[in-house]
Length: 449
Image (cartoon, rainbow, N blue to C red):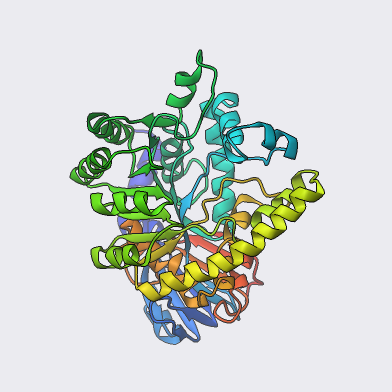
């Protein structure tokens, strides 16, 4: 027997166990509970083996800490649950095309960038890009994300597994694999010689219930956690029903990209689990979604002048384009305010996702993503509801309410901290200064006490 093995066997098993389950006592002036809106002041969280073991007043919690625990004191900070981005695209970083390029392409501003990623990057390149963007998300406070497509055949699944195995840093992920679409759903007018090869790397095209079921099974074969389908007057009710039936049979949720009222109704009738975007939703549909427990996943991607902000930094704009963007921003402010009011009034369950896939000059992916959520407040949503949308409500929509979304005993020790009060200033979310994922400190910009 090797000497090193003899030495290892000589170490008492209790000591090994204590080392493996080293405890951390996290202290802060305040802890916000999104469920109730109340704050515990001061607060302490006892963490062991990556999970929350106790939450309470510091003197009481400290008496229950095991021998050898470490203390992380964040001083006057406010603790919140780790943030959840329920709709993101980590394997794509679209650079806005020039005005002239945008005008001459039928596919608009997004599809050319997607096409460059699909045809111009290898699968390995995209996963490595995703690793960078995932790290940036985590550093901005996102400890959980749901990646909903634009990832190649299984790029987001590979990235998820790499994060779970500790190979690269990033949030815990739900991955959907290839998005389901009807033929021609995203790319049009491609070179016929290579069109199918390009499209098949990114999407499952379905044009029958049988193909819909096959696409779900294929994604499950690759290891998908959730099924994403995009519908735009190009999918039949029978195909939509088949997707949901097959996914639910396999215990997977279905997220439906739908904008118009008829397409939203199709998803509702099929029994989908969440409607993504849903700009054209009617009041009656919101009521039906509320009664059926279908989540509304709000994506405030272009709210608060986002498109104008990135356009100004990336392209030279003509006077007409500047005027058109300004007018569009003004119209959008009015629409989003009314949209937000209707959602809040309806009582429907809602979460929020950034839908981030854009290159934002001067910001990391995480900073770009988190900048979208204060826009909900600007549109009239109370700060507490914004926080709930990206913590407890998002966790429920993902089906992970037993593990993330709140600072409660038994859940993963996923926590963030800000210097101020996010209820009085929601933009504090854009200045997360402390991040912990599963008990491991990812970032701490507070002075240690």
